Image (cartoon, rainbow, N blue to C red):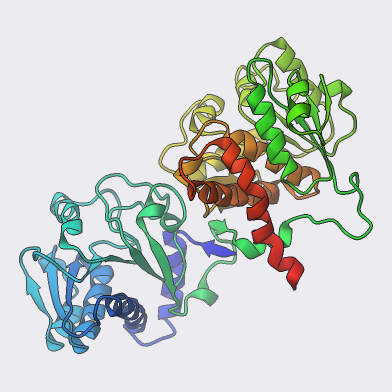
Length: 482
């Protein structure tokens, strides 16, 4: 599991650490880690000696990190040029170190560079880039070399992951002490490229409760329910799927396919597409209504359900149970007019999986630039775990925890992929996983399935469903081998 802290928390930890070490220690540690990563990149294209390195240097410590790293590279024979975007506020000691090592300053961008180090602004910046910096950033790709961002790509909103204007798109981001939200959420995350964390000794000084958590494959494998030697189809969990309709039978097929890929021992389907579901999935036990479905341990409701009175009846039947419930798609639309407010006053866990449009209808406003804060507000208001879909899906809990999914892909932006996710998540709930872990694990595996399906060409939702089993086997297989 990776943990992520906001700027104020990082600053507080840095202040506490700096009180215990000689002045300048943290900057030297950061510069050493940055120079090392840059040297590794240069080794791939002929080596450090004789290479051309461009430093984009802003004001303050971020520019200082870039200058000191440039000095280390110059000492190894690189031709290091520094473009000072704020000459009046440059880090003077860093600039002196660069010049002593043989580096020099330039007034304009060169025609080419083997490596570009983005030290324009760091985690203390707010708002978009200044026009002169934005103009420089727009020309970087013409220089040819890889771009390494110092701490965060310049121009991103560090605490939210928003990109309010022009911003650097880095190949590698070298960050110091800990991850920041812009590395893992929002449109800023893909701009960071490969993120490398350099240990500068900050860990013991950071608060124990991070702003965001990011699960990794080991977490998913540890959480994933698995049958024991005495398990049977009932003890493994039975998931109920109330999705689809005569108009949208595909939603029933896709959500059921997602559920079948999960850990439960049985899937019960309830809805008007029951004949289609049984033809496609013979192992599913099907009935025309929720009331006739039989015993389950969790319900999935909404995908393709429709919004007529029959759909309302099914939604009420699901919410009337004392079981964990996942609501998706049409079920979320049915909540908007407030007719189900009383139905939502339940003690059992509730998970909702809105995309941005559904979130807007539920919350009365779009998620906005701070998707984490938006998801947390909705989670608190509706007393549910909120899985806010996106390239970097957010999972927020009513208790204030936030998780970011690292496996998202634009390949999943295809009709029906959310139905597959809903079925898989419901199966994890029925398998006994806590709602937030079920949401995190489902999003993680679903993202990997989308990536795998994309390897074969354009992705459809059935492709995602078909890839789930192999991805799950790969993800949790190591646990059984130990």
